[in-house]
Image (cartoon, rainbow, N blue to C red; front, side):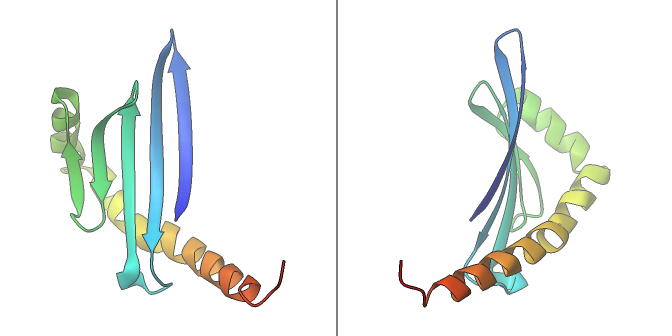
Length: 104
């Protein structure tokens, strides 16, 4: 898995995003891309490449999902599996295969 986290804080409240690429191989069909948004440890909205759209989990998340699913956000997120994950996953798989035969 590849994890990328962005954190912002203001007045003690924490807002962060987690982008994740789960994979079994470097083939595009074996990759799952998720982008989750959190506020104070509560996930309020998520994009999943297998679902193909944003899903809200709170009142604010549901409103954002409705808006983002009708805008450029969903188009960009749908392309992230290929543009973001595929290249990075290929690098990770190659690195893992190269190191798998080495003794530590």
